[in-house]
Length: 217
Image (tube, rainbow, N blue to C red; front, side):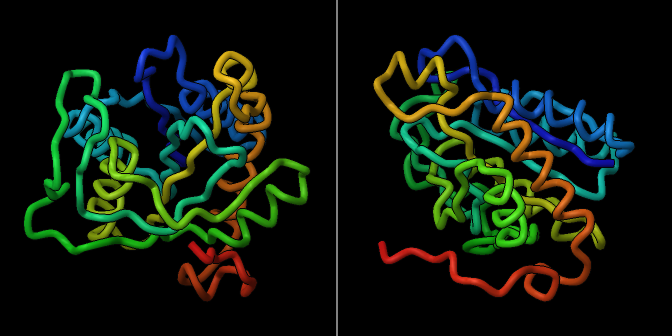
């Protein structure tokens, strides 16, 4: 079972392309003969992690791809690391705005994705979709969910997981004067990332490509 999650709209937006793309990718994976499901998460600290954990417990996936919107980015971003801090620049959808709070008190400082992030990036790039490895998932609800995901999966052998940020949709990008990407391309990228993860064996590094995808800043 492949579980994909996306978020409800936030920050005054009417839509969130992460949820639309997750739904389309789940259908594409099903059409390809793979068991897949999509679940929408609230854009709320705490509640989002709870919904995610409940979905993992109910569906028992072997792969979890959580997806969120990063308006202003121009590429699909495969996130490398989740950090144990909530620091909200804007309130979440319930009005919460934690500052310098841990996602889980006493938890590790960070978790790395267990996706083959570079093999996934290569597969998406080969399809002509703009993609990058990102070194930060921010400190908002996306990172909160990413950290909660990896914290949950830490006790589950054989289950891979990670987080992907998508840009504004094409329509949002035009409205904001910012980069945008067609939701269909986002969904195609998620599908390719999922297939790369389930067909790449071994540990995250051993099953991944050895190629540079770092950043100078």
